[in-house]
Image (cartoon, rainbow, N blue to C red; front, side, top):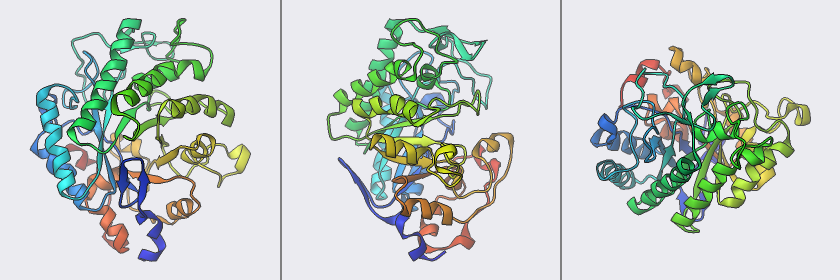
Amino acid sequence: MALAANDILFRPFRLKSLALDNRIVMAPMTRSFAAEGIPGAIQAEYYRRRAAGGVGLILSEGTVIDRPASRNDPGIPFFHGDAALQGWKQVIDAVHDAGGRMGPQIWHTGAVKSFQTDWAPEAPLESPSGLVAPGTPRGEAMSEEAIADTVAAFAKAAADAKRLGFDTVEIHGAHGYLIDQFFWSGTNERQDRYGGATIKERSRLAGEIVTAIRAAVGPDFPIILRVSQWKQQDYTVRLGETPDAMTDWLGPLVEAGVDILHCSQRRFWEPEFPEIDGQTGLNFAGWAKKLTGAATISVGSVGLSGDFMAAFGGESSSPVNLDHLVHRMENEEFDLIAVGRALITDPNWAAKVRAGDQAGFRNFDPVSLGELA
């Protein structure tokens, strides 16, 4: 694959204060190596290597807000408290020294159990209605006071990200975690203003979080929101069954202050509404961009043969060519592309793409999930 064939991936991207050298994003991936929730030198070196390897924007592993039960794994890093924030300062300085750009993904896991451990926080788990899936109790229904404190904690984390020198911030609103549990009618049975029959009503919490973050970071600091139709509890779930429903869901969040929608699919090449535009139609990120006007990141099994969720079951994946990705980006279907497992395996993946060194691509081995290299 020659450079001319993938030039679109290496065109600069500008949005507000965010200036990227290329369109490749390192996707946020849970790594669970932060002892006592504190990132340090190993995290700084891990992210520095990806910046030096040519990634345009790095989104950190999920890092949790200041709530008693915001994480489901003891190795997940905090984004609160002096020690953790000092660790993240070390990370962003290393990334900037290598010429990269980075944003933390701020997160609350809600009632979801970790794939990797049976550990659970001592505090009661939080969820919209005391459910982790339809008909499956786990956690306590959040009071309005707890919701208000959660909104404030997200805003504080975003303000700290800006203060530490990060270039953007991403809110994790996907994959069945807390914010997504409010979106999903199967886990949000609330009868107050945070529930409702429509996706627009159930998006109130997310809207309040975005509004609070925008107030905390000002008008020029870019806000990214990660969203998904599917849930780890149920791969078949669709929050926006039609373009109109998707507009009702995502449109108000963009109006509230989201600049970039990070649209997670298990396979980025699959059409979102094939009944409308066929099997080669727009994917989730393409439709989100079309309907809201926001910039979008697409993600989902980029550059590898296997589904990324299969990695948790021990499946390996081999490299595939990027022609299909390049074609979609040349058509301006979405603005940025996020890459996960390929960058865990090889910090120089982006540089190899730029050089056309397809022969140098590595297989993904799930063993690599057990190390931070």
